[in-house]
Length: 232
Image (tube, rainbow, N blue to C red; front, side):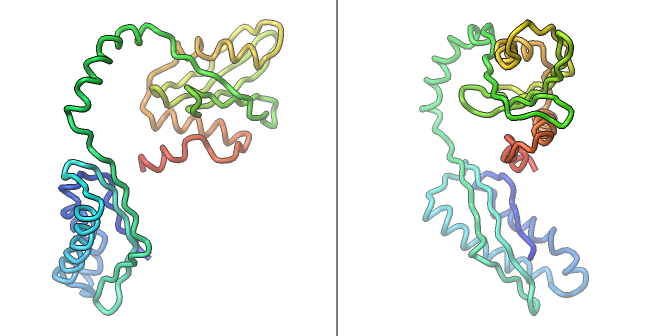
């Protein structure tokens, strides 16, 4: 059963997006004569009428809020039938400028100092690979944001990893001197310093590196599945 997905769109523009997506998905059916342009336009209009009731009258969405809509449908006897049991709507509300402005003004005073501070990450060992590499989860303010893989050597280690927050960074393979003692403690002490030298990248690249590392130890749900879905 095909699914109509609008992607992220401002609430004021959802109706046009629904219509465009439906026509794009059904262009082959129109070409074959299974459906007419009128059939598709009518179906889009009917769906938009229902969505208006939901978004405007029920959810009280403002025209500058952002929505994402999806619903399954099928074509039968030259009719497009929507399965409303599959309807999913996500809504992000716009915060009025008068609420944002004073917060931004206060924050702007401390922003320069923030840039001078080192980003403090913490780590948690999640397992070892088949060849003895050690994989760590990286956290920032209590949230999972990345992964690091460490290859222990004689008095040294090779480390590489990535984080997606507070800014996407990729740490290329780096050789470090390992001080005597517990490796976990050493990595915990050095992780923030290591990422201070990491490369700024697009979020998608950092997500890929993180999930590749976690997959090496089958670390359950990858840290960043939701981010990948949101960007697809």
